Length: 468
Image (cartoon, rainbow, N blue to C red; front, top):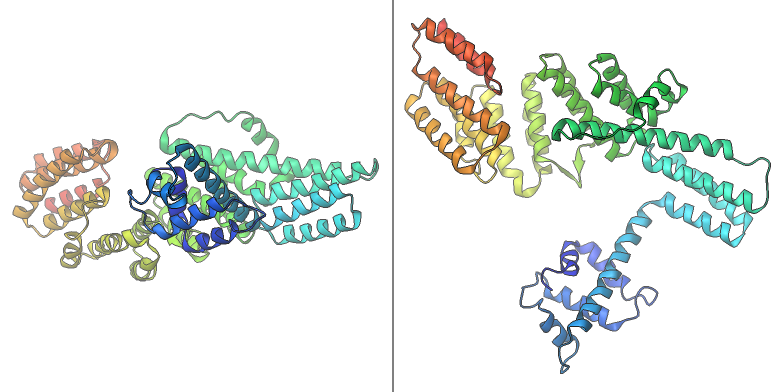
């Protein structure tokens, strides 16, 4: 039972949810089996639940003292309890979506054929829709409500004055917006994971939408320009996408806004990688805008990866005061288990940029090795620090230990090539002399031609400094 679905679900519930389920399963409407309540109480009392305490035999003995163990019987009770918990979880989601629960009430009054009550709840549903964020949930709810309106009119045999045209247009908007949003997500995923997707009728849809009045609808316009920006090297589409994103952000859900901001930022990163340095400011400003409306927070926390990327973006545009404040202000919003390590790592990057190497070194040597990529990048920064401080003995030792570390950890793909390239070229730099101009030129050509080398600019800068 220790590895059962029931136990996994139970221990994933927070205190508030457990208290709610405690009441839920005691309601005769949802559960009338006392053994289900008894099993729930046993799990609650087990707290963290040792393997021994959660053995089916132990639980059966507690529930049915003196009875012979019956595996089928205990499995059935476990199944009933799991069903109760899942009913509660589904009910909680249902109640959180006020407009959908309201529309189900509209449906109920339609089936009861109570016209006055039906119309009152339709009105209330429309008021809720007016307050909703524009997005896929809004479009779906709008469509469901119009379908109820149509079904009620048909049940009364009102063949004139129905809402078929309105219903058709709402369905069009819902389908077009959903297709465009999904296509943006598919393309973004495809760019990272090199997966091929079938976009079906999307090309025809894009042709139809060009210069169409549908582009005035925020739920369509934003995703249309997003997709065109992502797939075409045309800055005009990016600017239109960014305009739609800024003007409509108060009406979209945080989840949809988060996706859109991240897609806009990834567009900027792609442009930067192609040598368009002006997009560094664009990316930084997008991060700031997203932070201002808390769109990057998930369950109240800022991802450690997003935290790192924002610091990197701020340092690239030399907004040092802003980065200093961000590091401190958003540290409490990192997940507790990553908070200390990522704060120290990002603070070290800040000090490296300011060339305050002593403070940076003090933080980097304390970075936790369990986070492989952070540990590697910390060592990579130490390479630069030792090189620039001319601590050649320490540098030689670090280069050797880092190469061994990479081999031992089996770092794969891009990261392996990245760090091994830095190690290789730093070694060559270390043994070059200021008078060896031919060697310097040969190394410069090798660095420029290297396929994967994110530290290329730093290596070239060291060569330039050496040649002076």
